[in-house]
Amino acid sequence: MLAWINFSILIFSSLLFLYYYTLSVSPATREKILGPKAYAICARDRIISGIFEGITVINYIVYIFYPLQTPLPEKFPWVWWISVILAVLVGIFSGTLMFIGMRDAGEETLRPKKEHTMYGGIYTQIRHPQAVGEVFAWLAIAFLLNSPFLVLFSLIYFPIFIMLCLAEEQDLLWRYGEAYAEYCKKTGAFWPRQAG
Image (cartoon, rainbow, N blue to C red):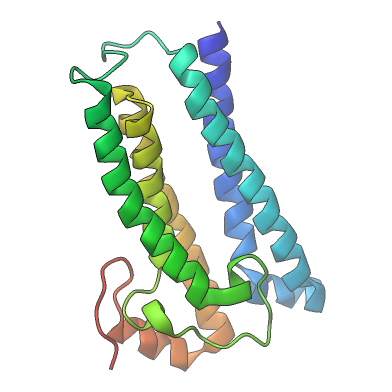
């Protein structure tokens, strides 16, 4: 029973993360309806999405103690330290991308601002470094917890993050217009490509 409750909360919090994060990346679109306060509302929605993402991490941990009965083994067939090595390798990749993306996005990472200009740094090569890093972070957590089920479940975040990035790009096209359209033509969305 507890396994199903935890899994239900995991699904629900993942969907609420998607919902609130999608709202948070749409300040220019929402400004048409809400006026200038849209940017502050989007910042609040970004925090709410982060809360639901945190709940999801907690659900991952609880899953180890209350797994669902599935045909998958509860743990990988190798010793745990191999999973730790995999988690560290994936985590280094994802953490580096997230850190560099956050550094180069600056305050816009948490608080969208109307006066913000388009990003430089890593964003000249890849449009969504934070999203790419974050989606792989779920795999790192699942490997660290040594759970085949959670590794497979983590794949759900790939389409979720694609949807988030598409929503964000629609808003950025609204915010920056032709400059962003040209940038998209020259820069990879999820794989680095040199703009220029």
